[in-house]
Amino acid sequence: MGLKRDMDMSLDAAKKMTSAAMADSRALNEALFDVKQTQSEAVFIGYREAVSEAMMILLTEILNPAFAKYPSLKPEGFE
Image (cartoon, rainbow, N blue to C red; front, side, top):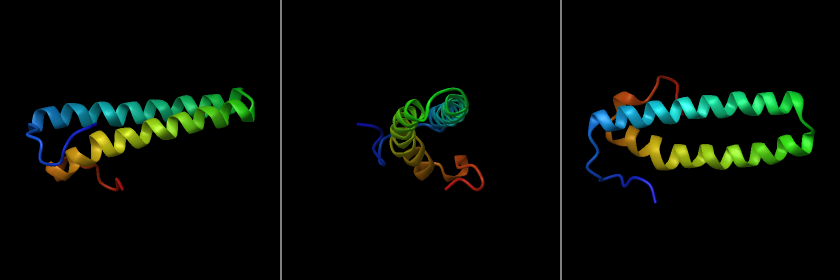
């Protein structure tokens, strides 16, 4: 599953995918904040776990491989 570190990935494709993954991460964080403000703790915890899994996939399967191949795409301060 996901990108392989040695996969032939163009810079253009990596830019598009990292941009989308970062935008999705921001959107998930914002949605989770809204859920925390409006829903029960139990509902929030359930969503937090699901968002955590999604973020881990975005990080390990899209962002890290793209940043490994094209370090210049990695945003400053991103760890």
